[in-house]
Structure formats: structure tokens, C-alpha cells
Length: 167
Image 1 (spheres, one colour):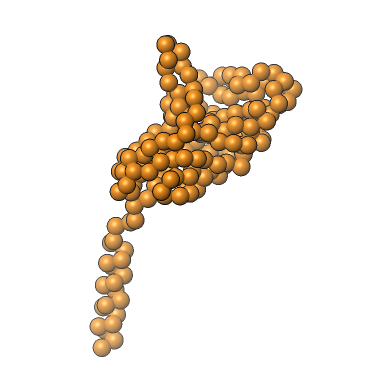
Image 2 (cartoon, one colour):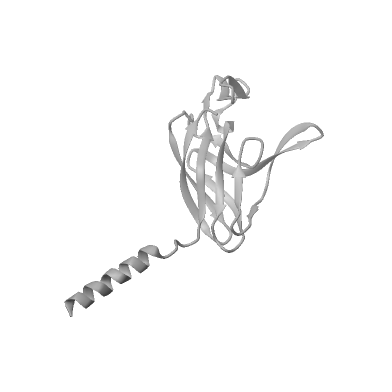
């Protein structure tokens, strides 16, 4: 009798552990562009070649300082959803942006929301979609980790962490 109970418990355990994981939104490979600002000097970021590039003119107040976050967003659900907002304590605001070529000029503009089709992946990359951190509250130094929240129309809030790095 007790062997039957043990066998049933083990069978339930095996079935539960083999069940497919629930579908979800996932963030992978998240990183933030390092940015150092100083109210008396130009805010800089590090380019992909390792050189410091001014992001704001000298004397710009740090409340105007910016950076960007890049990542891969996977919609593992069976329905399309829309990314409608993002939040991070290291910035006064976070905007969804896209970069596009317009008459041989690279232009960046905010977008209200991004559609992520069911089962699809959307990449946030330099020169493409990204989250713009506006009004940084502190320097973003390589190696630090920041918490973010993405807000979706259907899925709700998704929290994740990203590491600051020089590109």
C-alpha cells in the first residue's frame, strides 16, 4: 500500500517536472552604454572603437544627460503584445526610441509603443530600436548593474537587470 503511494508521488513529480514551461516575455543580453557626466565638463560615452565621444556640450547640467539600453526581447507567448513604457531609477524618464536613415542622415525619434508578434523576437541595438535613458541621476560606469521594468499592454510589468558596459 505505501509503495503504491510512493510510486504515485514519484509519477506526479516526473510529470510536473516534464511539463512545458509557461510562455512568457523574456529579456536576453541586456546592456547599457556607459556614460560619465560632470556639471563642469562634457558628458561622454565610449564609442565602439573605445574612444570617448561627447554626448552633451560642456557645462550641460546632468539632468539632461542621456544613455541607452540594448537587449533582445522574446515574446514566448501565443499572442502579440505591445511594449508601451519602460522605467529605470537611474534616469528621470525612459523613452522607447528608434534610429532610422532619412535622406542619408541618421535620425533618432521616440515611438509610443512597439508591437511584438507572438513567438517573435525584437532586437534593441545601436542604430535601431533602443530605450533612451533621459536625465541620468548618476554616472553609468562599466560593471555596474541597473534594474529596469518594461510595461506591456497585455503581459503587464517585466523586471530585469542590465549591466553597464563600454560598447
